[in-house]
Image 1: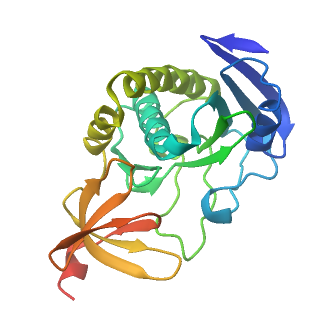
Image 2 (image 1 turned 90 degrees about the vertical axis):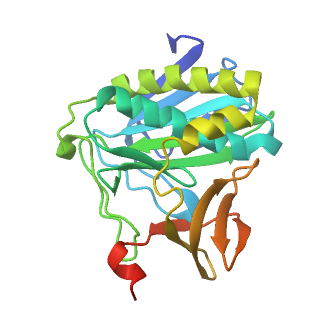
Length: 247
């Protein structure tokens, strides 16, 4: 184990899933705050049961920390906001935006994935993947193309981004503890794409179209449609292009 600030760092040549290893560590936490990384990952997974294709040279990490499960909706925003500012530090020149609930879009292409899972002993595991040197094809049904930092002209390595992320995570976790979710939410809204714009939310059973009005105190998406604002628990956002609005 190495140390990065208060974090115990466990780095492996290859793992099936960094999240699985981090969950296993939570049975007897080696240190209160820890992070697991791997140079190669063979069985990565993403949200909603999707496979996370793990290309060599990219960043695969899972952080483990004690966190009440009732606040896991807040943690999604802490993690995504921390990753946003970590990437901004290595790539200040590229257009980078957050997308609800936890994606990062660089030049309007997806460069990361986040998956939160419950561990043992009141631990939450946050798995994070960042496309650094290569980007997998996401399939014909994907809302966005994928990209990697190298293809966008950014020279970075996984350890650099890892260290920046842990620093930013400490900052925003402290902000949340001291000032509550409102302060984290405000910072997130300042950097989200499409606030006040028309979007389509692709859910498991239906598509909902409306105007993106922000998020509530639990992180649920606020969507204005037919002169009322509804709350959306889950789904994939697609931003409506100007030529689509005329249809």
